[in-house]
Amino acid sequence: MPDHDRIEGAAKNMGGKAKEFAGKITGDEKLKAEGKADQVSGKIQNAVGGLKDSLREDKRN
Image 1 (cartoon, rainbow, N blue to C red):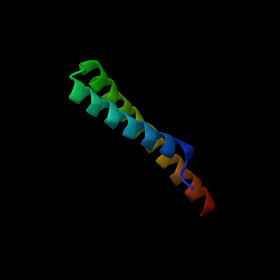
Image 2: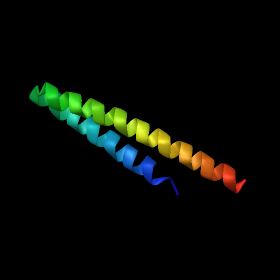
Image 3: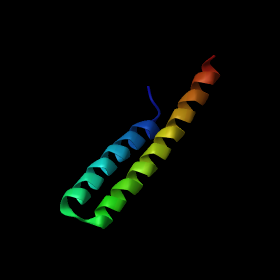
């Protein structure tokens, strides 16, 4: 099972994409920027979760 951080990171990334898209449609630069920031944060969180998964897998072997 994937690490909790990977799941949350992926969700945050998707939410950020939706925010960015909404910002583009409405012309709201602040919402667009928040969406981009959420995407970066989600990608980082997903990477941390991937690292945890790798470490956990290494312990099993």
